[in-house]
Length: 285
Ligand SMILES: Cc1cc2nc3c(=O)[nH]c(=O)nc-3n(C[C@H](O)[C@H](O)[C@H](O)COP(=O)(O)OP(=O)(O)OC[C@H]3O[C@@H](n4cnc5c(N)ncnc54)[C@H](O)[C@@H]3O)c2cc1C
Image (cartoon, rainbow, N blue to C red):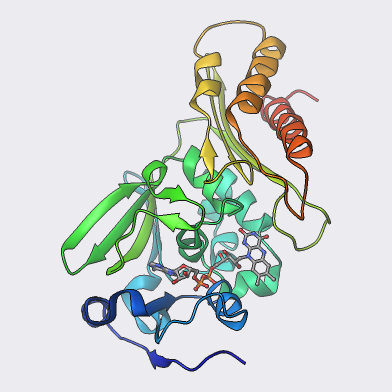
């Protein structure tokens, strides 16, 4: 049984702001609830007040603009992302990450914003958002602000959100012209499980090579590795650059040993997946 709580279903963001200002850390929001209610069931958290975001129409906005890019509201589900041709064709790395998260039932309730606000190091969509330079639109009693995704994760299950703030949407600019991307997830099973390691990569191969790589499950937060980008700033044979990128990743990460994997296996697989991602995205074998 889940411990008792008071339930609120605001209809506007103004009502939500007031509830958060009034109840602060005693309140928890949810969109899909696929993280929140598991923690409550296991008695790991006991919020007195639970706020359902799904009644706020504004938070369900999902739009694309040629100039400004993609905007994904806080209650847009992962399945809604997967059904979008724009996400599939222009933001392939995010589409691939959303499809790697859990199973269709969880994705029918779970949201992208819930995935990042939960701030697990294993969050599957986080590395994709990191390589896409996403921004998080935040609001609260003090007004609105934008947090670059690289500054959003500050520790295991910790974000830079203040207790009375909420995420309205995630904004993603158009990737560089000609970019290809993918998320490579390694788990204990082929079915539903958190990543042992996940690698998101975005690659442009027209004239100058551009490469961005970010990982899940290998650091206290999802992690982008700028050292990889530096490797490709200089010219050189592709195979050598890929091996230098693999070394850069393996030097940067600091995984733990847990029920899913040993630290050593994570380091090994981070290398394997980085190499695989870059070879495939550059069109090699
Ligand atoms: C069986 C199972 C399998 C799973 N497999 C995976 C997996 O493979 N990969 C993976 O990454 N995750 C996995 N998850 C975790 C979860 O499904 C995802 O993190 C999902 O995206 C969470 O979305 P949600 O809308 O359900 O989040 P919720 O549970 O609604 O919220 C998650 C957290 O974010 C906060 N929050 C939600 N919305 C906002 C907002 N707008 N502003 C501020 N805070 C907010 C909530 O208070 C809560 O702390 C799994 C969960 C289950 C139960």
